[in-house]
Structures are given as C-alpha cells and as structure tokens.
Amino acid sequence: MMRDATYYIKHLGLESHPEGGYFQNSYSSQNHDGNRKLYTSIYFLLGAGDVSHFHRLKSDELWYFHDGSPLLIHVIDEEGNYIEHKLGLDLENGEVPQVLVPKNTIFGSSVIDNRAFSLVGCMVAPGFEYEDFELFTQNELLHKYPSHKEIIYKMAYETLPELE
Image 1 (cartoon, rainbow, N blue to C red):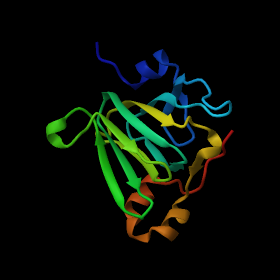
Image 2: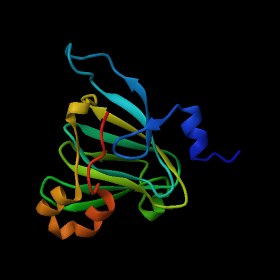
Image 3: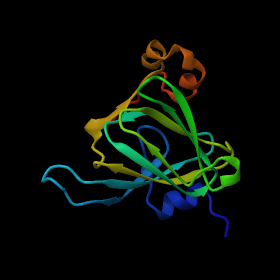
C-alpha cells in the first residue's frame, strides 16, 4: 500500500505547526522536577514543497526518520556556521537515521524530494515548552548572518505568522 502525506495526517491526527508542516504530540514524560517534563516527543510531517522555518529551541532536539523522502536539516550553529544534515536511510549517500540539533542553534528543515513528503519524529529534552520556541524573520537573520543570505531567504519567514 502506497502511503502519502494525507494518510499520515489523517491516521496520526496531525495538525498545522507554526514553524510549517504538521505535528502531533506522541509522548510526554512525567515531570522530573515538579515543573518540567524530562522529554517530549512528536510526529512531524513536511509535505511537498513545505519547509520548517528557521527557529530556535532552548533544549536539544533529536530527529528520527520514519517514512517518505529524506529530509535536510539546516542549522546555523552558535558560532554562525551553516551546516546541513541529511536525515534518511540511504547511509551510502550520507544520510543518517537520526540527527541531534543542539540547544540554542537556529534550524529548520526541507524535504529533499520536493514532490514528496517526509515523516519524522522529534524528541526534545528537557521537554518542549512554547516559551522556549523562537521563530525568526529573514531580516532578523540577515542582519546577523549576511553570508547565509540564500538559505535564510529559503528557510525564514518574511514576516512572522500570527500564533495562537
């Protein structure tokens, strides 16, 4: 059976995410200190032509490949270096089945085959909280990282969307 993005959106109950794509919480640990979850995990799907716009978390995030096209994870690290990771299962061609995005780095993702979808899992430790989530505009990033202009135009919002 051929599964497409619509199949996973329906069967996993995925909803639109402010950074782009679709997500659904899949697991949250018990609070480990009475206030904060030790870790949280989601399913995350990008459809054909979608991107996960540049954002930053105050926690580490581990990405796992599940199905569809491999995914590029675009990272601007704390020193301002641009790094690309290929998340997928074609190990001979430089893909890896999991990628760690360290806390405080700016990152986003895009589907390698822009006619396909990508389904991944993302685990955040300590657990995800929206107050630790920061989206960026193109102007904000161009001011700080002018040498990464091409990827910033592709991966950052021109203006931020209204968040609920």
